[in-house]
Structure formats: structure tokens, C-alpha cells
Image 1 (cartoon, rainbow, N blue to C red):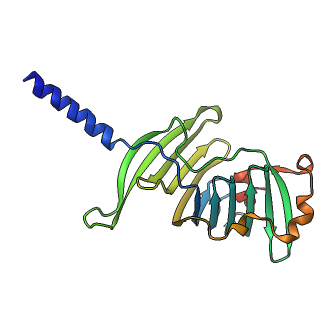
Image 2: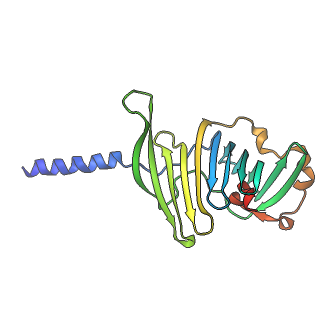
Image 3: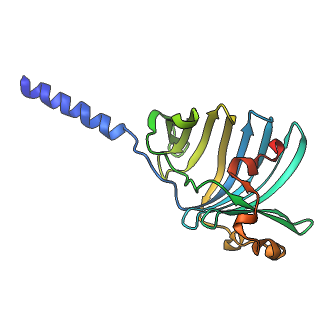
Length: 218
């Protein structure tokens, strides 16, 4: 009898360990589309992104609207060099700014814990459902909280919500994601940025990811 109880307990613990998702890191190269809405400023944007975790680079092309009107973005962020380029191909102009925040790879931050495992779509028919894990975490230093949803297979980002007193609530959704990089040249500043490239880092205005992708808040 004691042996049966022990086996039952071990089986229960093994099942819990097997179903408990583990923190994951997304593939190092991705391209896709994203939608973002910020509570402060009422900013909504959608567009494409190219992600290079090894080179710590991000290219974003999007358009959107805010309380101040409509806008379009073409941003190249190079975190290893601590710079970003605001690119306007239509006018062949470019503005270089200093990035005052480190690169944050797409992953489950340390200290996060799983809160749910769900199937997006249906699990009744093979190939018509996507198993996803939801994670929650806090950043006490800035009174921020976040909820992140990643696919169980391949750790592809699906959505995220970030809230803090300073930024309000920010909602991001990812879709149409492909593994790899479409064009490595997307991570090289256009030729008309050459004069900006020569500027010294200490002479540049400072910005960060959320300020750059939320021009309606400037």
C-alpha cells in the first residue's frame, strides 16, 4: 500500500514537471509584423520588423496614428554601437540618436513565472491549434508589470502587455513571423546617412526604444 502511495506521488510530481513550461529564448533571427497600442498618447502602430539578436540590431518599418495625427516610421537600432537612425527614404534624410538603454533580447525575463498554458485555435484537429505559454513578471524598481505570451514550440513571441506609472499600458501583438532575415542590408544605414554616421556619440540626442516607436509622445 505504501509503495502504491509513493508511486502515485512520484507520478504526480513527474506529470507536473512535464507540463510546467520552462523559460525560453526566441530564435536569434526573425522577421514579421507587429501591432502596438500605447495608453498614453493613444498611439497605435502596425508594420514590419527585422530582428538580429546576435548583432543586437532591430529594423522597424511601420505607420500609425496618435492624438497628434498620423505618422510613419523607419528605424534602425544598433544596440552594440548604442545608436539608432530615424530614416526618411522619401526625402533622403536621416537622423542619428544615442540609445540610452541596453539591448533586450526577445525572451522570458529572469524571475518570470508561468500563469497559463493554452491552445490558440482548436486542439480537436491536428495542425489547427497552437500551444502557447503565458508568463507574468514584475520590475519593482519602476513599479512595472508585464505579461508575455510565447509559443511552446520554438519560443515565438505572440503578444505582450507592459504597464508602469510612467508609460501606462502598452500592448504588442506579433504575427506572420518567419525565422531568418529577409535582407542583411536592412541592418546597414542607407547611403544618405553617411554624414550622420560620422557624428560622435556624446554629441547626439538620447532616446530609447519606446520613445522612438512612439513619436506621438514626443
